[in-house]
Every structure is written in structure tokens, then in C-alpha cells.
Length: 321
Image 1 (cartoon, rainbow, N blue to C red):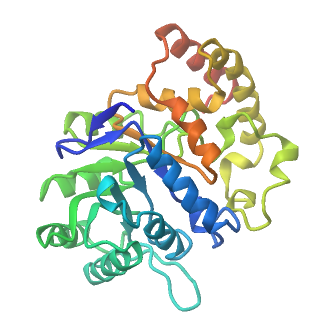
Image 2: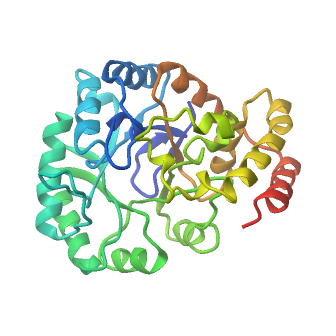
């Protein structure tokens, strides 16, 4: 697979990384129960096919996701650039709370190292901003973990330009992980240009908009999701009206464009994210080896300028946020 350098780090990531959100299994923001054996097989298939990095988080499955990743990487740790996140710890009643206090970050890092079965994390990221803790304090804790060799590189997720700049003023931000897809373009205006200007790596999450851009969704398909799948929530904006129907109409019209390249709508959506000059790579989830295989078709090719314009026109006419 093609690789791109992550910011100024010198680390080269394949254009697609395996996202392990769903692999965590059932929790408040999970995708329903998962088969751990299938998850392990999926991770190993992705590595066998050339993907060289995995993105997970402590909170996925409340630690279970990291344990599954650690199990899959036994004997293969040195092959993988491993990224995880902190800042969303949970209590004994499985209640998750935002906490970017330095002591919490350090505790989470130690727990992640244990669950992942490793003595270092390649990329450690603050999962979400926390307005009750000065970002300088949180970032200082990340820097100390890097100085101690527990993590190689440090980054953030879901940060805006102001917080990125405050971190950058203290110590270089190695990467940002923002949501980015054909229909979720909030980072286009300011955040991606800032990252490009400051040579901050960008690993985009949800390029398939949580499955909506795969071409598999319909009103009936939504009803087949597990009862505890977070996409059933009223707060799942793109899975509720009026956006849900608009997006389905948009995806339907992407079909002929994708077919012109011998690709699926999902592969077209991944390639679209990779077309942005600020994007280093895309995080794409998979729950089966077959899904991992299919995702690979989103990398290693480009969409023509004419088709990029067609996609833009379709987006404005159908979703048009």
C-alpha cells in the first residue's frame, strides 16, 4: 500500500489505517456485541494485506477494544504503528466522563499499555477537549509521557484551531484526528488549512460516515442494527431526519461515479478524503476480514478533477449543509 509521512514525525503510515471503535463491543457509544475471534481475524487480515497502523481508544468498549487489539498483535507488535487515545475514563458503574487532568492522563496511559500488551504507544492522543482543564496542563502531561519513552508521538483529536495553536506554542503537535467525510466537512474551512500550514499530520476518522457512505444503508437496513448500536440514538444526527434521507439520495447518485473507476461507493468515499492535500491517512473501521479487504480499494488511486466537481455539485444539491 502507498504510505504518507505523518506530519514531521518521520513515521510513514499506509493511506488507510484500521479503526477499532466497533471492535470494542457493547457500551453506550458502541456498535453492539462483537465476536472477539472475528475481530482478531480482521486485525490480522488487515496487517497481512499491508495496513501498517491501527487506531483505537481506551474508551472503546471501556477497555475491551484495547484488549482485543493487544491479543491480535501478539508476536506482531513491531510491525504496527499503534495509536490510542485518552481523556474519557469511566467509573465502576461504567459512566464515562471527560477528564484531561494530568494525573488522569498518566493513569490512562499506564492502563492502555497494560491492556495493549506493549511497553510503548506509537501515537498517544487526547480524545476530546475538556474545558475544565487548561489545555496547557493536559498537553504538558502528554509531553512528559513522550520524554519518558512511554509514547513516541503525541497528538489530539477533535480539537479546533485555537486549542491546536495553544498546544503548538508549547510543543509540536504531531497529529490531529478530526471527523472528515464527503458529508461532514466542518474541518475544511479552517482546521485542515491550519494543519497543512503547520505540517501537522491529519488522520481522518469516519470517512464512511459510520457506514452511511457504503451504499448499504436504507430505511429498512437501519432497523436491522443491534438495539444497542449508537446509530439508533436520537443524537446520531446523520441517522435521523431530515439528514438521513438526504444522505441516502446523495449516496445513490455516487454509484455511477464509483462504477466508472470499478469501485464501490465506500471506496470512492475513502478516496475522496485522501484527495485533500492536508490528509495523511484515513481511519476505516472493519468488523470482518472481508470488510478489511474491501476497504483497501479506497487507497492507491485518485479521483479526477471533473469527478470531484461532480461530487461537489451532487453534495450541494442533495445534502447542502
